[in-house]
Image (tube, rainbow, N blue to C red; front, side, top):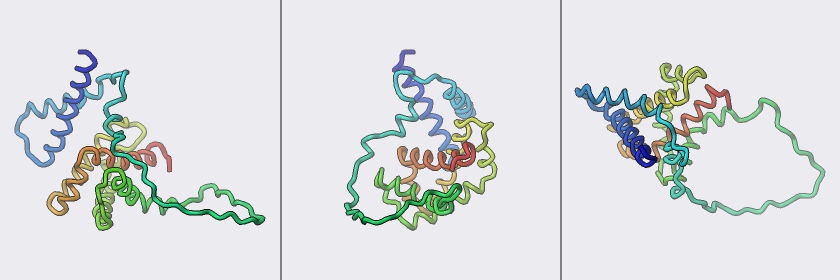
Amino acid sequence: MDDEQQIAFKSEIKSFVRLYRFLSQIITFTDVSLEKYYVFLTDLYKKLPFNKNILPTEVLEEIDLDSYKLQHQFTTELPLVSQNSAMKGMNPGAGGKGDDEYEWLTNIIKVLNDTFGVDLKDEDKLDFERMKNNIYGNEDLMSFFNAKNTRDNIQDKFNEEIDSELLNFINTKLDLYNKLSEDKINLMFKRLWFNDIYDKRVRNIG
């Protein structure tokens, strides 16, 4: 295959795997051949080489410059006072880790709102909080976050569990489900959350 055919082929594989993975959670398939294709293509996709002339597909999907903008928030004056004073340095090990842990969902909601104009509201935080508790309470998923596992395998498992959690909103919060299931929003939402857990549990950062 030439470069364009390779790119198109990988795109078709990814579309099939993503669609099948989603539909298999809400529909009972009886077509064995579809399941065989899913298993085969999932492994095949991981072994296909990246095109060296362009960025990886995952990066291109995550970066959409049309979705970002510079926005002026406010202007303020910072008066300087002439006096003898000293700046106090940071204490090793000190910091607002507890506050950061508590506010991480708020930050994700803000990023999604600012980037895509999703209009997620404060009351949505309760649903996010329940989702968070379910994810962190999922021992099977958390066991995947270890240095012996590959990042791709961990992320595939994480994405599956997030999709499963989002399905819980279909009957109760259809509007929220539709917002978080939109491709670009869904991709960024998962990446932000996954990177946070991966850094803490696998890379021991934060």
